[in-house]
Length: 284
Image 1 (cartoon, one colour):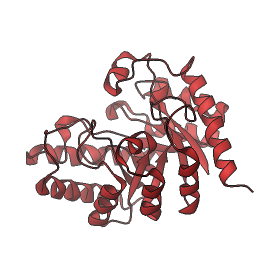
Image 2 (cartoon, one colour):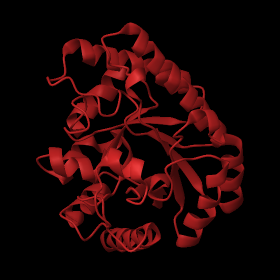
Image 3 (cartoon, rainbow, N blue to C red):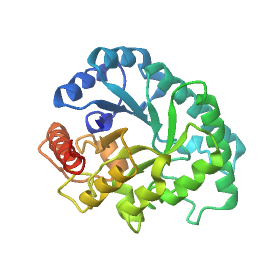
Image 4 (cartoon, helix red, strand yellow):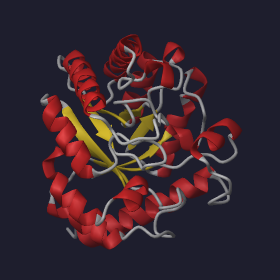
């Protein structure tokens, strides 16, 4: 099992000035760094790949589509823009040597209509995602759709939604991304949802229910780790939180307090808990 952390815990950007973050997370004991190409036009894919190789880190990437590139928009031009942007991000991921491209990469993050998902929206999303996965199919990149809580999206809220979605996309590189922060708000039973997802899950975010340090929250961690063991999940467990000191980012994700003395403290304490809990349920 690899353990990862996301770049947005430390920085609201990712350009050449952020490459030293890889050295930071490697020194903390992480195996994987999840990067967010906040601005794809300045994302240093080639330099990132080299730094990761030098340090022995693996990479994943998380990206959320903006409203003007919404792949479930009723406007066909907006949907096409979403597919084009996604293909650009896929190309950057491949250039950087990313293993999993995850997140709200199937519709615009924060997009709400005030209604339930419609049949048309479902079809638009499936068709768009299939085109994105087809574009990635010449590479080893896995494209994983993350379930989100109802306040961030109405489209894929549960693991069952995501499994149905990737099944209808019908591409071997399409997979499910689960996240405990969202699951505790939407699932009846987190462990049961993990077991029902099974081999369709390619990526897992282990997040505190409040976005703080795992283990000091309401997630049923023992049941969660038993379920991960039972489905044979052995890819990467990534700690995802955000830096409350970055005003714009904190406003977007609605974090209004500190969860630790520093982002580094949150990362190190979170990693220690996740490694210990994993070892408890996977004794050698």
